[in-house]
Image (cartoon, rainbow, N blue to C red; front, top):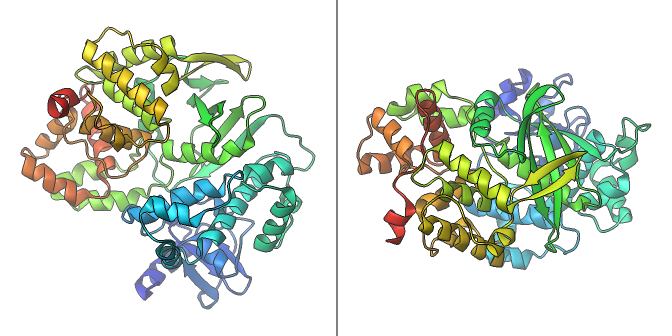
Length: 499
């Protein structure tokens, strides 16, 4: 790192500035450990410190994670995130492979999916992460296992398989090599037994406008599938259907409490007999849904740099991308929202989920689950809306049932699916950071209010705010909802793309 960055990082670690949590890591050479900048331990002297862009780079340098601040719990954000799409995709694919114990890591196959050579992928990891793909896989597995050992009473055997190891013996070997500790030594509450409920804490960088996110979910909630009161406390909960690599479906529910100390406390309950190897997938999904890896000050600074946006961006700092469970769900929500108000769209959504979803008992209560693409494909959509839009729902369901791993951009050839629907699915279903929904009626009106009233100015704005267009989209929605009820896109995909 350069001298200027070192000076900034030194100030951040000495003040324990939570805004830098996960942005960099502090290697303490005198003790052989690495920490988050918010570590409560006595700050080491600067001559004994080395700064790292990622925790995996610190681990590759021979340092072990601090047991007080737990670097594996830091929000995941490196300086290149949001701009290096190849590296982002590589990390996503490798993290998925790391936590799938059924298949060995195939670097050549991952490289082919990325459209690069395996040699270039290794060079990319060396330059960005300071390590190799194989070492990064072991790092991901051990760090997830460490988090489960610290925060849950899940049996160690289950922890090993949940983290992607094929055997407990291999788990113990890699864990000992990485941390110089045995898994059992990290158990703080040895007397407690696993009850079937998991409670995890997930960190984020402040500020976090939780009230705004909760209001967004509440306005668009599906009865029986989402809830906001649990045991007298206000939070957010919903049902999820998780799929194993072999295509098996497992039910889960989660509930999120009010944030405390820059953390969300999440309670997770899996259906009886659920595959514990789904836990990494679930945790990753929850971090995306609640946008826990965002860097609000960095995003706000970029948006405030545009004069027309300075006031509104500063006022709504802490706005996050409010996600849903999948791009398929987001696509269905988008299609139902064409040319109608949000209220009408959610009424239709509730009817669809009631008709096609499934009820299942979990944690002693009957819960409703969003229909899978296969469930929707088996029965034609019959809702009080135009036939063309019902047919779009059917087309999307059949396509996703036949190609469950498809990405939203692959839907474009379908009649009734156009750029707006795809962009909405990428925004809320995939967590893309740079989706400015400029064709949305509410967004258009807000941009006009900001003095941006022609296509050239809006195109220039999209380039100026990149790669944070998604945050501007949510900020403009929030600004509009404070005055009037937001409405869905009226420039529909049927008219703009398919006709």
